[in-house]
Every structure is written in C-alpha cells, then in structure tokens.
Image 1 (tube, helix red, strand yellow):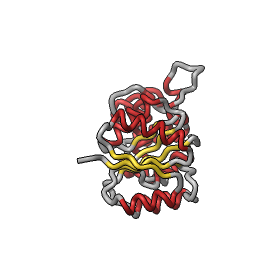
Image 2 (image 1 turned 135 degrees about the vertical axis):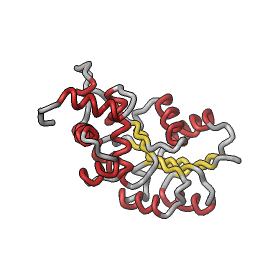
Image 3 (image 1 turned 90 degrees about the horizontal axis):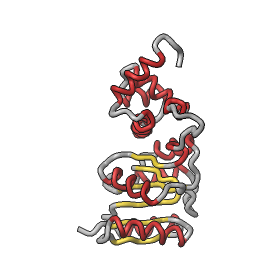
Length: 210
C-alpha cells in the first residue's frame, strides 16, 4: 500500500529538499506539498488515509501551538504528525511535544539525523531531534554536564523509581514529554536503560541535593 505523506512548509526550497530525502527513504510514497495551513486542511480532507504530516511550526495560518494541539486532536491517531522548526528552544519544544505530536525535527539537523529520527518515529516512538536537546556543553567531556535543567529533574525522579505517569504529574507535563526526556537522558548519559541511569544518579548524588 502506497504511503501518503504531506510536507507543509512555506519555503519551496525546504519542501523540495525534504521531499527528496523522503523519496530516498520511501521510494513508493505519494508526497503532497502545502505552503500554508489552509492547504494542509484541504489535503487532509482529500487524503483521509494520509500516513504522515510533516509541518513547519511557523507555517502561515498556523496561529498557535493550541491550534497544533487541536489539529492533533481532530485527526486520526494513525496519522503521524512531525513538527519541523528552526526554533529549537527547549521550552518551546516541550510545549510542542505536549500537544501529542509524534516528533519534533529541528532544521539544524543533518540529513542522516532526519533519516534516523523518521525511522524511529515510524516504529512508534516519540522522538525529538534538534540541537537544543542534543547539543552538548562542548567544554566538558562529562555527559552529566551536558544535561538540561529539565533532564536533571527527570533523572532525579527516575532515580526515585517514579513511572513516566508519576513524573508527568510531578512536573506538570505530559507523559509524551516525559518519554522524550527519558530517551534523551539515556542517550546523553550513554547508558542502556533507565535502571542504569537511576543507579548512576544514586552513585553520583547519594546524600546530596540535586
């Protein structure tokens, strides 16, 4: 069955570049383009079985993150929605993920990062790939120094044995967002799973405040 994909970005050059990359990954995909949010609505109406929507956060006509959340709410859960943006502020990315989208790809990412991220998202994971999350403090080789403040909060709660649902309630964020933070935390610490991350926290901070 042919994969139906919509690429929505106001810049034709970026759309064409993303379409070229998608065709390399999914040669049989049928890819449609949109330059504004109204065109996205029309395409979704004409393609009720669309499999993936890649949408620019600042797409003309997409007025707010609340509108993005409404789009997610009003579309089939089987539709993979991936937000693309040159805005890679961690707090903004967190708000985007809280809408229930399947992933976020920063425009600073290289083609290989995009390929890897798309592959993970298509397997059912919620993935964030952008410099704000993945960029390290280059003046230190210690991965702990590379963690964001939010990752440290999540790490602390993971070390307490909290589930993703409990962490979400404690930090007033969505379980989707927690999954993203836990995944990025595990990658940043270069550990195989959350249990090892928790053990490492205990070893570093036993008897100390975070």
